[in-house]
Image (tube, rainbow, N blue to C red; front, side):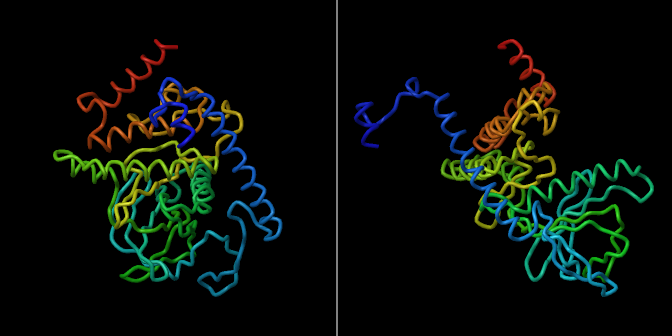
Length: 320
């Protein structure tokens, strides 16, 4: 601070004197060094422990009492109690539950009745599920929803409920995460749309989101669907990023990351255009979320998402 004061004269740095490109390059070098150190550490741990990417195996028992190999992220179904439904989505439901005495949220992914999907479709959905688990199970940060475990269902797998046991068909997968009683940030903002939030609350929510995203990016993870519906609030109103169904590790070559992934209204122009992108697409979505947190409403609420999207892409095309 002393050096800054002596250079600027008033304790402030003029915005037009900040070299953003230089700062961005410094941050990139810092994150790259941190990522390299973390990768080397994980490699050494993997060499010593014999596992990697969530494939470290332990021993468990199936319903017949036979000993089977269990990956480190797999739950023990006998310890899981599934309760009421708290949310519904395209491919399944989210339930309240208890796992090993802890309150949890249980995400059941239902891919349709057996025989109604081709093997290729089921394989694709399973690959997406495995991708979510591999990304999520190693994350540990107060602003990221805590992953507890998961399992891929089979006809032999039983899940305990309050009404007895139910069989889990092979096309159902189960993800268990910490339960956040505050619900989705989106719902919280809608409830406060008329009276708005106190400025200190806005700052707290924004900082929570920024810290969570910064952590993901330090791990070379691009969330790709940053929106207030994918942010949960715990009992202290701390924001936690959730839903890593479309997250992926950032490619070293940006051209390897293309495709329209995310939610209209939050998607960066380069993603909408199908152009190569990187973690900066999350930063664009973060900006939309900042607007939404401050106003308790989306930008241009009188326009449809498709109209906003078209305007964003057209504006970018005109500029470049």
